Image (cartoon, rainbow, N blue to C red):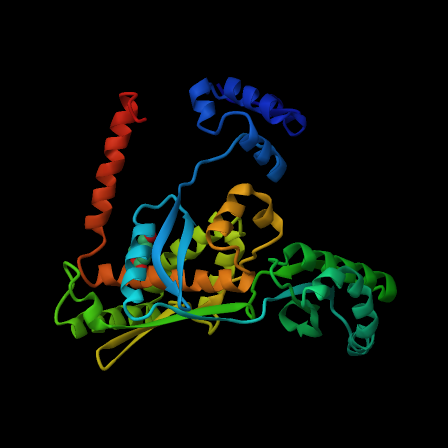
Length: 398
Ligand code: MEV
């Protein structure tokens, strides 16, 4: 029977429990089906405070990638992902890379930008606004007291023209330390927008942070003798040829857009899984990564490889706005546990780990793709899932 608009009336005002009863009734869900979204209790309570119209939780497996050495420290990386093989691949690559001493990483200051879009200013109006920047800075300072105490704060104000849109953009660059920065930047932007409207009477179209995060980059690199992966079944020989093919596969992603998208998807298999495990905003991180991949006007792979004297080197750098406090990072207890497993890193260390994980993920993919392929491993996992489904049908999955 076709559902009617009024069937869902008052949905917003219902408790999670009432909503579950309504949906079970409307959609003919059995108690067992409803309970796949979690039994009512702490998890549904958490869902209720984290999102609107909560019904329950969708289980995403959490696993640990092992074998990483990052800046001379052993690291075990929590990853939340629904995709088979990803965690095994990262761990496998990490162990090979460890034979060459592991990953080296670097990070930039955690700078984020807020943007206020203003309708077409004449040059003298733009000058008047620029001249008032010191006043704007003092106004924003009130929101930045605790960030300043932590070493962060406003770094730059800038007014530029967006010719195509006939607009001006006020940009504010803020060092957000361990936070993702969205809440802070949005507050600052809206405060600035209100001030511009009231003091100057300009038309402000909107005010919001930018997810570009171009200055908040993290990178990782490794070098490993080709001999370190020459004994992998299915790898071509001699070892230099195996390494040469990895370099060539990397070049395919630099020059071919279709391949670049797949390679970067593989990199994000790792980074997004770490982001999700730690309660970070996966979409913000993905948007920044893909925009960076196209920064030269052409979408390209994010990882690069070279081979010199039998030593293969890999490198990656991209914006990684991962927070270690604030938002849902500090809120969900599961995310807090993942951060604890990581040793409660600061935002920059977490971003460095994400870079290392992304590079390991790409290296693992290239090892498989230029060697035995990825299907053999996938098929083993498919068989495991098929056995689980069959057992579940017979009611013996537990
Ligand atoms: C699959 O999720 C990811 C890969 O396609 C990545 C790649 O091709 O580099 C294996």
